[in-house]
Image: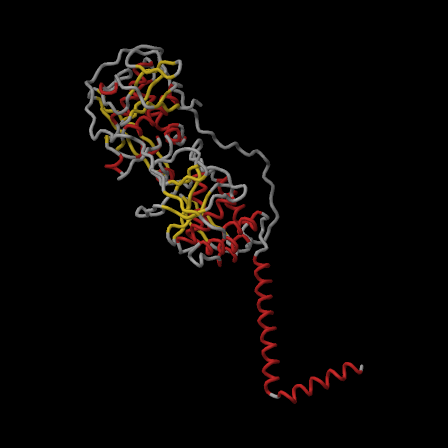
Length: 496
């Protein structure tokens, strides 16, 4: 007790002795304590902020803050080495020698929904359900109205400052938010709409664009979500703007790409006027995000319906033929968004069931009962003459391979578009094995059938040339300029 009293007296004497100076010292001491408390507060807030929902995110966040490297744009690969012909001189019409068995086309009936025979039971009266709460964002996605809730943490996240640190800051904000339900909802919608990888990419892009007005911040969310969905996507900076780079195991033509550990990462521009020379980025992928973007379209997406109709007409030996089809315009729009994938993607994609049934029924009435050679050559004439020939650069301002569904929609097409459509019809109508035959400036097809004419050998098999662009030619007639030229490559059309 004596010590305490002495201390108190000593403090009192100290204050009396030094007066106002003692008060200033005390205030300064208090200020230092306040500053330390504020730092502790900030530190605790930061620690709280970094309570990531995924244990992978802490280490990856630290990696994002490390030194980045410069990566230079790789040379973009073109579909064709030489420009395709502007015009193609037609062949002289030639009568087809009828050989082979008689043809009878079978059209699979549309599957009807099974009738529910469960007895109807009277339900007790219930009050009407409460009014549905509007979700945070809603938009049209190829005829489907989609809605998503977005957590406050994702909404508030921002790309600031506009440099490498800003990327890490954005990642920290979203990784510590309640983002999991959004990822699960994207997976659910992708599955219910039967979206392939490209469809999922478009869905994630649409969500991010509807959430953020700032394009860079929108790309950051796209990067985050695609990584969480398992796709290998890198982020980089070109100056002060965000660049997304998507890993693909297969070549994507006419797309800027960067090499990371001997793997190509491709850039898809949101605007046609975007340009890029190099980016600053990092080597390491997000842990577990290893999936390449696969552009295969083995099954069509389930989109909203926007039904349209058209009649395809052509003349053969002065006789006019009409084939009426219906199609979903939303599917055409989806396909129009596609980048320039490898040819296998287009040759092996289906036509929607409705359109194929119309097409098969329209062709069937003209070929049933005819010999195989006549029937197959009728289909060749249909593809040759129902569309005007025009180069992609003239029609679209760029090289574009069309799906068979698109070729039926557009009034004009060129060689590979017709090759894709003809291959599909040969395979589906007649069960014939088909190859796409690529030259440096042209595309034709070849059929594994016992007919005479110009032939190619692929492996141990001999195929007969059929050219859907060489108007009036029949199966076995190749264009004269390619008869002595070895094809660059063959595209295998998968049998069902």
